[in-house]
Length: 130
Image 1 (cartoon, rainbow, N blue to C red):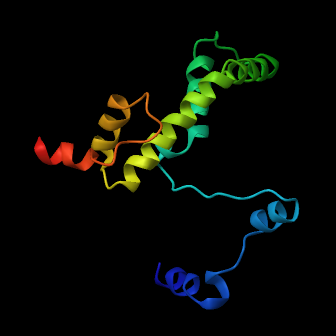
Image 2: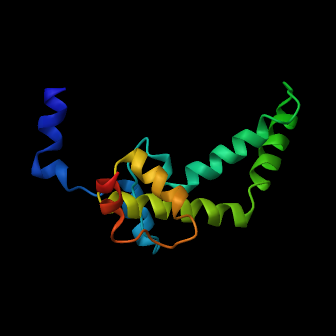
């Protein structure tokens, strides 16, 4: 615990680029690390959740071929339209957090202003009135 904290705060270790970052940058791909356990900020997690829900609807099997086919079919059921919807939801949560809302307020605002690209600037004033 203390040793790990001490090592990670040393200049030699603190600002070192990971192997993944190095490889992706060499190939021209930007790397974006998102916070753990915040699935509302990462639309890939929402896509994965949608695919898992669909996978549970398939009949159970112990055959590897069936399992692989069911996984691929479940992943293919997540449409581009659904992915865009999840990405928009994520952008709404990011915008809400940047405006100072907490998780419950962000969920409420995302639901209320779901047709808007961003939340209005006066969103915090609405919570002050309530």
